[in-house]
Amino acid sequence: MIHIKNVTKLYPQNDIPALRNVQFRVQPGEFVSIVGQSGSGKTTLVKLLIAEEKPTKGQILLGDWDVGEIRASEVPHLRRQIGVIFQDFKLLPQKTVYENVAFALEACGAPTRQIKAVVPQLLKIVNLDDKADRYPRQLSGGEQQRVVIARSLAHRPKLLVADEPTGNLDALNAKEITNLLLKINQFGTTVLLVTHNREIVNSLKRRVITLDQGMLVNDAEVGKYII
Amino acid sequence: MTKFFRIVKFAWQSLGRNLWLTIMTVIVLSVTLFSVNVLLSLNVVTGAVAKSLESRIDVSVYVKAGATDDEKNSLRSYLVGLPQTADVKTVSPEDALAAFRSRHADEPNVLKALDEVGDNPLGATFVVTAKSLDQYPMIIAALDHPAYSGLIDRTEKDFEDYSTLIAKVQDIRDRVSGFGIALLIVFALLAMVIMVNVVRVAIFTHKEEIGIMKLVGANGSFIRGPYLIESVILSFLSLIIASAGIAAAVWFGSPYLASFLGTDPGLIPFFVGNAALIAVSEFAALVALTGIASSYAVGRYMKV
Image 1 (cartoon, rainbow over the protein chains, first blue to last red):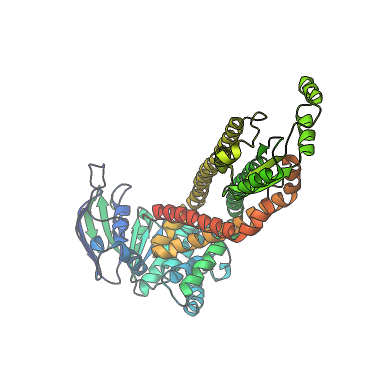
Image 2 (image 1 turned 120 degrees about the vertical axis):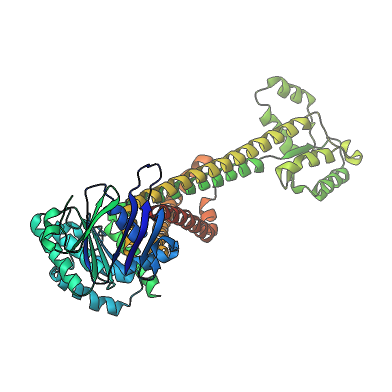
């Protein structure tokens, strides 16, 4: 369902490409870790997938979407198909836990009745149903990340992209988040985990795509963190 | 409709949950609007002062002592019939003499000469008031009519002086009025700049949120909408506060101003008579300004 076809990304005023001729496919329901050191192009790949940037060369096919060719007006629709989790959480600070998760549904015009039914379920999945009225500043890092996961699941996306989701968390919380991602994958959601956390990658025993200086250097079905 | 209600709900939530920012924004907008209204009041006051000054200007036509009643009546009718004339008052020779003595009270030689004359050498005086200041020159020119110029005593006052005085008053009035308008325009522009920047700063504090909303899949109108509604609400609140301030200032200040100027500047009637127009214009201008500033600022931060 994801096809990265010979993608190159060159940022303006930068001679070295962030990504060079990267090519791989991801099938529906897969759990793929994308690893590499800082500057290897992992975050650039995430930005290309959510149409925050466009590829300089190549194609990015996400289901029926050619992400490099979509119009600006179609970007919000694309992003509703993809759940995204960031290292710095990106929660709306003036909205409660409930409101942050509900926002994803309100933004696409979901009826109030549906929102009232779905949001509590999502909070239950991430074990935050008792903290629905709290604000992000009143939560721990792990709890905030769980809110983000709940929000990313609001649209029942087929693809979940997690960009360094454990970067700001301690080992225990990191493990908890990883387990949550595995649980989500078990329900059929394709998960792309972008990380440089060696321990997590090695413990997963899933497919690992390795990037180095913008190039794909390894793609192993049961991989390890080799950089 | 659901989307609209959600946008309004988000706007109110944002204003309430960023209460200090809301209060400071309203204060700045209110003070700016208040100062624009103060300048408006200043324009009204200067206009009233200029009008008061104009109303004190008149032309005194001194009739020669030997003129008959028919000649005096004919001259009076002629003056009344001039299209530029608003009013003609008649001062009797006796009242004219008293006024002459009063005007020259500091000139003993003149008074002595008058006493030596014995009889009242003065005739009647017609005090002519024009419909507007710029019509006095035409009235003065009309006094040269061959049928009547012989009846008018021009030794007492040279009409050239009147023309010069009237021209000076007109000049002062026009300069004050022009200055007032220029000041109002400059201040209105400054007010606009202040308001736009206040809104930009307010939106800047939401920069990160705007980016997050875009990443989560909200479209442009859903992101912009709450900020536009906030602009309307902030504009309304600022207008209420500024209006209350100017109403209080005008209500309590008018008597003191009237006492100082010697004439009622007419601020209360002006604001009462134009309340709806002023309120609607200022609200519309405020909403347009803050809305445009909001929309532009949000647009900049939406480039994610």
